[in-house]
Structures are given as structure tokens and as C-alpha cells.
Figure 1 (tube, one colour):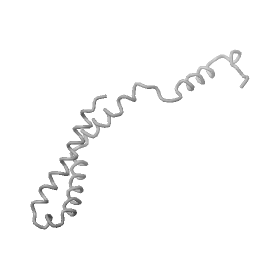
Figure 2: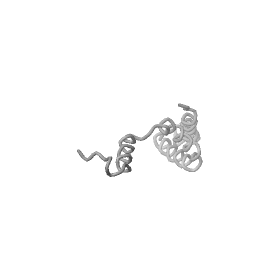
Figure 3: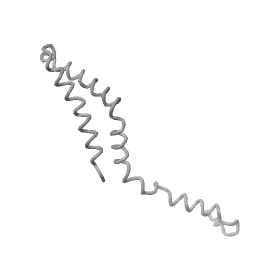
Figure 4: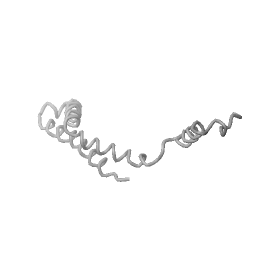
Length: 97
């Protein structure tokens, strides 16, 4: 599994919070009300990630879902057996069940 896109997206999300938080902490009012600076930084970071991090998010989710794609879904063998039974001629069908 290639974890690079997930790591890149995580680092970008963390930076989208830390940079606005650091800038807000430069103001004297936010030095006293650090919890308010954290709330504003979280909102700014969320907004930035929604606006600018769509492609890294898509790459991260695609890389996380890639190991599952080659596998067949659960119950695929049952569906194949049912399809084969329905496609068989009427004389060859097993009607005991």
C-alpha cells in the first residue's frame, strides 16, 4: 500500500491549521484567549482545505481504496453459481431445494 498521498494530505491539513493559529497568536488579544484563536484557526483551516485540497483528498482516498479494488465483492461466487443455475437448460436444473 502506498501511503504517500495520505501523508501529504495529512501534513497539508495540519499546516492549514498551524499557520493561521500562529498568525492569530501574533495579536495580543489572542494571546490571552488562545482557545478563541484555536477555534478561528480551525475554521480557517477547514475552509482552506475545502477550497484548495480537493485533489490531494481525492488522491488519498483513491490510494486507501486501491487495495480493495482487485478483490471480488463478498458473495460473488454465490451470484455466479445462481447465474449459472438460471442459465442452465430446464432439464439440467436441480430442483431438490
